[in-house]
Image (cartoon, rainbow, N blue to C red; front, side, top):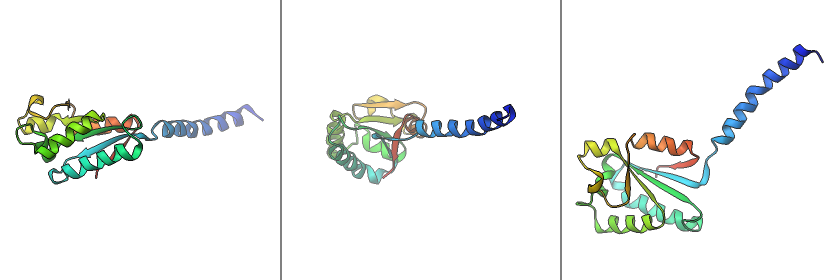
Length: 145
């Protein structure tokens, strides 16, 4: 085999191997899930989905779940206006390991601070959708019920 042919074969096969490695690195991990919640009317439905998700996977030691809330749905998690049901479910899910992220842009738009939300939230300063993209890049499966 000539060197030229060998170089042609190597250069042609290299991009495919790089693409395959990149695809493998981006493969979502079903034990890491990011729920996207923006619709106020879906808050209790999504909290129920998360509870069922933990149970179906065998508990919090089998799955890591993050909830990213932005837009109108964040109003359901304002301490002053949260229903007893949302407060109780959020508390239970937090104890199961649910990571709660509030969109910083939505917080500014709604004029709320972290202290105004139910306990356990952290601020996604970069914004909710950017946080979701970052979680996906870390291998989280994206769900928007």
